[in-house]
Amino acid sequence: MVRGLHSRKHPLEKRDLMPQEISVSYQAIKSKVYRLIDALVVGEKNEVEVQESIRRWWDLIHPADRPVAQKYLLMVLGRSASALDAVGDGLYAASGSPKTHSRLDGPHDAGRRIRLIERLVKETGVRPAV
Image 1 (cartoon, rainbow, N blue to C red):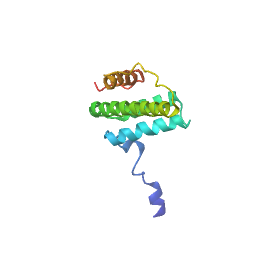
Image 2: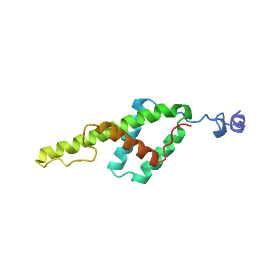
Image 3: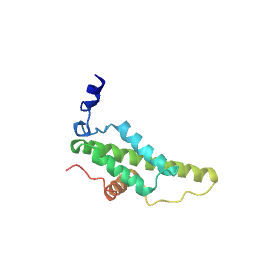
Image 4: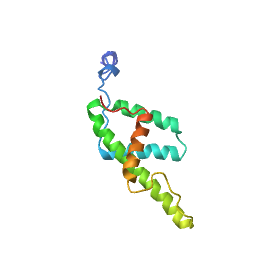
């Protein structure tokens, strides 16, 4: 009987596995982005490794889900950029230094940031759904 168990084909061979499904919820994407930012900040990954990680992650997303994933990704990146700006501005204010003016300062900051983020997403190889 023991011999019979060992001679059977394993029920889950690699060819029988379904492709990994990637969640495209806002929370899941935010979590992915924040983990990558954290890995970069603490030195676990460099910029190239973060870019490669996001490329691999993007390739796992079903093409039909990519427009929603891209929307959420751009939202998270835009809000993250705003948060970093706020941290920098707070630091300048706390230190008594005058705020340095960014080329993204002005009445349409959010729109400019989103366009910049979209360009960065394109440059890093994240492709919109076809």
